[in-house]
Length: 212
Image 1: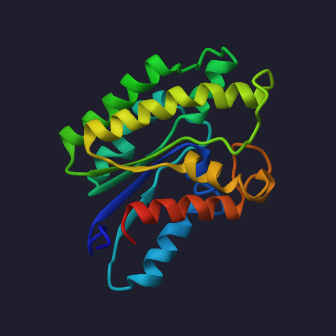
Image 2 (image 1 turned 30 degrees about the horizontal axis):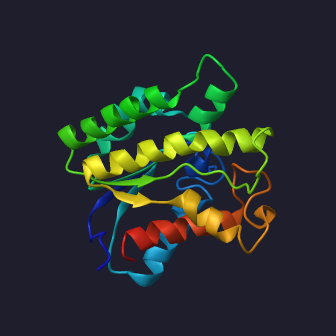
């Protein structure tokens, strides 16, 4: 059965893919997978009134999430918490910027956030994998380097999902499965920020995990 129940509070938090304009013209849910998923939930379950918050902020890493975890997650006292983070951590690590969050920092910082959620709320967790919509096979290219490094971040999310009993949305696998049949441009004008089709795929995978 669909796991989101009438009267529950749901928080979505992450980077630009979650944000998707929710702080601008597309307030309050953005125009991406969060809005698509919520609209489909309404369409199928009109009797279930959910209290929902999109707390995505473009450019965020897990370090940024940690710095705003109290007001943007704990304060809402969610019944369900959906987290999608990691690609900015990877890019800044690859570019060796001061904001870099390599895998060995990514996992413990992420764990601290989830521990706080478990300690201070009753939220069930949903962890959405970072993804990169590219089929590049040359490891010397920028896209090839990102794909090679992404594995460590995906492994971290998988471990955390198991550790915390979270629902695990394997978004990267879903995109890679699609790329066997369709070009990346059908989902993403560049490998990070999906178009409507790409966001629909993420929403679909999220709803599958929620037994929609």
